[in-house]
Image (cartoon, rainbow, N blue to C red; front, side):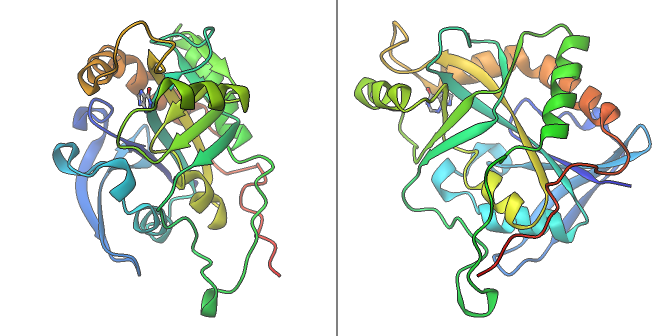
Length: 259
Ligand code: HPA
Protein backbone atom coordinates (compact mmCIF):
# COMPACT_ATOMS: atom_id res chain seq x y z
CA UNK A 1 0.00 0.00 0.00
CA UNK A 2 1.38 3.39 -1.04
CA UNK A 3 2.16 5.80 1.84
CA UNK A 4 1.41 9.51 1.45
CA UNK A 5 2.91 12.54 3.16
CA UNK A 6 1.49 16.04 3.17
CA UNK A 7 4.01 18.86 3.36
CA UNK A 8 2.24 21.96 4.55
CA UNK A 9 2.25 24.86 6.86
CA UNK A 10 0.02 26.82 9.14
CA UNK A 11 -3.65 26.37 8.34
CA UNK A 12 -3.17 23.20 6.34
CA UNK A 13 -2.89 20.66 9.11
CA UNK A 14 -5.69 20.03 11.54
CA UNK A 15 -4.95 17.06 13.85
CA UNK A 16 -8.64 16.07 13.87
CA UNK A 17 -8.49 14.99 10.20
CA UNK A 18 -6.35 11.96 11.13
CA UNK A 19 -6.99 9.25 13.73
CA UNK A 20 -4.42 7.33 15.86
CA UNK A 21 -2.00 10.27 15.60
CA UNK A 22 1.54 10.05 16.95
CA UNK A 23 4.77 12.03 16.57
CA UNK A 24 7.54 10.21 14.73
CA UNK A 25 11.20 11.24 14.73
CA UNK A 26 13.54 10.10 11.96
CA UNK A 27 17.31 10.53 11.79
CA UNK A 28 18.85 11.27 8.38
CA UNK A 29 22.40 12.02 7.19
CA UNK A 30 21.29 15.67 7.02
CA UNK A 31 19.71 15.98 10.48
CA UNK A 32 16.60 14.67 12.23
CA UNK A 33 13.01 15.36 11.23
CA UNK A 34 9.78 15.09 13.20
CA UNK A 35 6.44 14.38 11.53
CA UNK A 36 2.92 13.56 12.66
CA UNK A 37 1.66 10.16 11.51
CA UNK A 38 -1.96 9.06 11.56
CA UNK A 39 -4.66 7.21 9.68
CA UNK A 40 -7.23 8.49 7.24
CA UNK A 41 -9.82 6.10 5.77
CA UNK A 42 -7.54 3.12 6.34
CA UNK A 43 -4.45 4.77 4.86
CA UNK A 44 -1.36 5.88 6.75
CA UNK A 45 -0.76 9.60 6.21
CA UNK A 46 2.20 11.63 7.44
CA UNK A 47 2.11 15.36 7.98
CA UNK A 48 5.23 17.50 7.84
CA UNK A 49 5.25 21.16 8.85
CA UNK A 50 7.73 22.66 6.38
CA UNK A 51 8.41 25.84 8.36
CA UNK A 52 8.72 24.12 11.75
CA UNK A 53 6.72 24.91 14.89
CA UNK A 54 5.27 28.45 14.86
CA UNK A 55 6.45 29.17 11.28
CA UNK A 56 10.00 29.72 12.59
CA UNK A 57 12.13 28.53 9.63
CA UNK A 58 12.32 30.88 6.61
CA UNK A 59 12.18 29.34 3.09
CA UNK A 60 15.92 29.62 2.41
CA UNK A 61 16.81 27.88 5.71
CA UNK A 62 14.49 24.87 5.41
CA UNK A 63 16.41 21.59 5.58
CA UNK A 64 14.89 20.27 2.34
CA UNK A 65 17.28 17.31 2.10
CA UNK A 66 16.53 16.05 5.63
CA UNK A 67 12.79 16.45 4.99
CA UNK A 68 12.71 14.43 1.76
CA UNK A 69 15.26 11.83 2.86
CA UNK A 70 13.38 11.35 6.14
CA UNK A 71 10.05 10.85 4.39
CA UNK A 72 11.61 8.21 2.13
CA UNK A 73 13.10 6.45 5.18
CA UNK A 74 9.66 6.43 6.77
CA UNK A 75 8.29 4.52 3.77
CA UNK A 76 6.60 7.44 2.01
CA UNK A 77 6.30 7.15 -1.78
CA UNK A 78 3.86 10.00 -2.50
CA UNK A 79 4.22 13.64 -1.43
CA UNK A 80 1.39 16.17 -1.64
CA UNK A 81 2.90 19.59 -1.05
CA UNK A 82 1.13 22.87 -0.44
CA UNK A 83 2.61 26.25 -1.29
CA UNK A 84 1.40 29.83 -1.05
CA UNK A 85 2.12 31.74 -4.26
CA UNK A 86 1.75 35.10 -5.91
CA UNK A 87 0.24 35.08 -9.39
CA UNK A 88 1.74 36.49 -12.59
CA UNK A 89 -1.21 35.28 -14.62
CA UNK A 90 -4.44 37.27 -14.45
CA UNK A 91 -6.47 34.07 -15.02
CA UNK A 92 -5.00 32.57 -11.83
CA UNK A 93 -6.66 34.83 -9.31
CA UNK A 94 -6.24 35.06 -5.53
CA UNK A 95 -8.17 32.19 -3.95
CA UNK A 96 -7.62 29.79 -6.86
CA UNK A 97 -5.69 26.52 -6.65
CA UNK A 98 -3.12 25.73 -9.34
CA UNK A 99 -1.46 22.34 -9.86
CA UNK A 100 1.86 23.25 -11.51
CA UNK A 101 3.28 21.05 -14.26
CA UNK A 102 6.62 22.89 -14.68
CA UNK A 103 8.96 25.03 -12.65
CA UNK A 104 11.69 27.61 -13.14
CA UNK A 105 14.14 28.06 -10.30
CA UNK A 106 15.98 31.17 -9.27
CA UNK A 107 17.23 30.12 -5.85
CA UNK A 108 20.78 30.95 -4.83
CA UNK A 109 22.10 29.09 -1.83
CA UNK A 110 20.15 25.89 -1.28
CA UNK A 111 21.45 22.34 -1.03
CA UNK A 112 19.55 20.96 -3.99
CA UNK A 113 20.79 17.41 -4.61
CA UNK A 114 21.55 14.13 -2.89
CA UNK A 115 24.19 13.45 -5.57
CA UNK A 116 27.12 15.57 -4.46
CA UNK A 117 29.80 13.40 -6.04
CA UNK A 118 32.02 11.18 -3.90
CA UNK A 119 30.27 8.01 -2.79
CA UNK A 120 26.89 9.29 -3.93
CA UNK A 121 28.19 9.56 -7.48
CA UNK A 122 27.32 11.91 -10.33
CA UNK A 123 23.68 11.52 -11.28
CA UNK A 124 21.62 13.58 -13.73
CA UNK A 125 17.94 13.17 -13.01
CA UNK A 126 15.32 13.53 -15.74
CA UNK A 127 12.95 16.48 -15.10
CA UNK A 128 10.78 16.30 -18.19
CA UNK A 129 7.70 15.76 -16.03
CA UNK A 130 8.68 17.08 -12.57
CA UNK A 131 5.23 16.78 -10.98
CA UNK A 132 3.50 13.38 -10.72
CA UNK A 133 0.77 13.22 -13.40
CA UNK A 134 -1.31 10.75 -11.36
CA UNK A 135 -1.47 13.03 -8.32
CA UNK A 136 -2.17 16.09 -10.51
CA UNK A 137 -5.06 14.30 -12.13
CA UNK A 138 -6.45 13.27 -8.70
CA UNK A 139 -6.04 16.91 -7.55
CA UNK A 140 -8.17 18.09 -10.50
CA UNK A 141 -10.92 15.54 -9.77
CA UNK A 142 -10.87 16.43 -6.08
CA UNK A 143 -11.09 20.18 -6.84
CA UNK A 144 -14.15 19.52 -9.02
CA UNK A 145 -15.77 17.50 -6.24
CA UNK A 146 -15.34 20.28 -3.71
CA UNK A 147 -16.24 22.91 -6.36
CA UNK A 148 -13.10 25.00 -5.88
CA UNK A 149 -11.70 26.88 -8.90
CA UNK A 150 -8.49 25.15 -9.99
CA UNK A 151 -6.07 25.22 -12.92
CA UNK A 152 -4.50 22.12 -14.38
CA UNK A 153 -0.90 23.14 -15.09
CA UNK A 154 1.18 26.27 -14.71
CA UNK A 155 4.82 27.21 -14.30
CA UNK A 156 5.98 27.80 -10.73
CA UNK A 157 8.91 30.20 -10.32
CA UNK A 158 10.88 29.57 -7.13
CA UNK A 159 12.79 32.54 -5.73
CA UNK A 160 15.28 32.57 -2.86
CA UNK A 161 13.27 34.92 -0.63
CA UNK A 162 12.60 35.70 2.09
CA UNK A 163 11.85 39.09 0.57
CA UNK A 164 9.11 39.49 -2.01
CA UNK A 165 10.10 40.30 -5.59
CA UNK A 166 10.55 43.64 -7.35
CA UNK A 167 8.10 44.47 -10.16
CA UNK A 168 11.07 44.28 -12.58
CA UNK A 169 11.81 40.71 -11.48
CA UNK A 170 8.16 39.78 -11.88
CA UNK A 171 8.14 41.25 -15.40
CA UNK A 172 11.18 39.11 -16.25
CA UNK A 173 9.68 35.92 -14.78
CA UNK A 174 6.51 36.57 -16.77
CA UNK A 175 8.51 36.94 -20.01
CA UNK A 176 10.27 33.68 -19.18
CA UNK A 177 6.91 31.90 -19.00
CA UNK A 178 6.23 31.92 -15.26
CA UNK A 179 2.64 31.87 -13.97
CA UNK A 180 3.24 31.72 -10.22
CA UNK A 181 5.94 32.81 -7.83
CA UNK A 182 6.81 31.30 -4.46
CA UNK A 183 9.77 30.53 -2.23
CA UNK A 184 9.36 26.95 -1.04
CA UNK A 185 8.61 24.36 -3.72
CA UNK A 186 12.24 24.04 -4.89
CA UNK A 187 14.37 21.99 -4.30
CA UNK A 188 11.69 19.77 -2.72
CA UNK A 189 10.35 18.75 -6.12
CA UNK A 190 13.77 17.79 -7.51
CA UNK A 191 14.92 16.00 -4.35
CA UNK A 192 11.73 13.93 -4.34
CA UNK A 193 12.38 12.84 -7.92
CA UNK A 194 16.00 12.00 -7.14
CA UNK A 195 14.70 9.48 -4.60
CA UNK A 196 11.95 8.22 -6.89
CA UNK A 197 9.04 9.69 -4.89
CA UNK A 198 5.88 10.98 -6.53
CA UNK A 199 5.55 14.70 -5.83
CA UNK A 200 2.87 17.22 -6.75
CA UNK A 201 2.00 20.62 -5.36
CA UNK A 202 -1.14 22.59 -4.70
CA UNK A 203 -0.25 26.21 -5.26
CA UNK A 204 -2.67 28.44 -3.38
CA UNK A 205 -2.80 31.87 -4.97
CA UNK A 206 -2.79 34.41 -2.15
CA UNK A 207 -2.09 37.61 -4.15
CA UNK A 208 -1.13 39.05 -7.51
CA UNK A 209 2.66 39.42 -7.67
CA UNK A 210 4.52 42.71 -7.13
CA UNK A 211 3.72 45.29 -9.79
CA UNK A 212 0.58 43.38 -10.85
CA UNK A 213 -1.03 43.84 -7.46
CA UNK A 214 -2.29 47.38 -6.92
CA UNK A 215 -0.95 47.45 -3.36
CA UNK A 216 2.31 46.62 -1.57
CA UNK A 217 2.63 42.98 -0.47
CA UNK A 218 2.62 41.79 3.12
CA UNK A 219 2.96 38.42 4.84
CA UNK A 220 -0.23 39.25 6.77
CA UNK A 221 -2.15 39.43 3.48
CA UNK A 222 -0.77 36.01 2.50
CA UNK A 223 -1.76 34.53 5.88
CA UNK A 224 -5.25 36.04 5.71
CA UNK A 225 -5.97 34.43 2.32
CA UNK A 226 -4.45 31.12 3.49
CA UNK A 227 -6.80 31.18 6.48
CA UNK A 228 -9.77 31.63 4.11
CA UNK A 229 -8.57 28.70 2.00
CA UNK A 230 -7.69 26.32 4.84
CA UNK A 231 -10.97 24.39 4.90
CA UNK A 232 -10.92 23.81 1.13
CA UNK A 233 -7.24 22.87 1.09
CA UNK A 234 -7.86 20.21 3.74
CA UNK A 235 -10.89 18.96 1.79
CA UNK A 236 -8.87 18.84 -1.42
CA UNK A 237 -5.98 16.89 0.16
CA UNK A 238 -8.23 14.31 1.80
CA UNK A 239 -10.34 13.77 -1.35
CA UNK A 240 -7.12 13.40 -3.34
CA UNK A 241 -5.82 10.71 -0.97
CA UNK A 242 -9.13 8.85 -1.38
CA UNK A 243 -8.90 9.08 -5.18
CA UNK A 244 -5.32 7.85 -5.52
CA UNK A 245 -4.92 4.17 -6.42
CA UNK A 246 -3.62 1.96 -3.56
CA UNK A 247 -0.41 1.34 -5.53
CA UNK A 248 1.52 3.75 -7.76
CA UNK A 249 1.15 3.28 -11.50
CA UNK A 250 3.09 6.32 -12.81
CA UNK A 251 6.73 6.51 -13.88
CA UNK A 252 8.05 8.67 -11.01
CA UNK A 253 9.80 5.74 -9.31
CA UNK A 254 12.02 4.88 -12.29
CA UNK A 255 15.67 5.02 -11.30
CA UNK A 256 17.60 8.14 -12.22
CA UNK A 257 20.06 7.71 -15.04
CA UNK A 258 23.65 7.87 -13.85
CA UNK A 259 26.81 8.78 -15.68
N1 HPA B 1 6.00 36.08 -3.96
C1 HPA B 1 6.71 35.07 -3.39
N2 HPA B 1 6.16 34.21 -2.55
C2 HPA B 1 4.86 34.34 -2.26
C3 HPA B 1 4.07 35.36 -2.81
C4 HPA B 1 4.67 36.29 -3.71
O1 HPA B 1 4.04 37.22 -4.24
N3 HPA B 1 2.81 35.21 -2.31
C5 HPA B 1 2.86 34.12 -1.50
N4 HPA B 1 4.08 33.59 -1.46
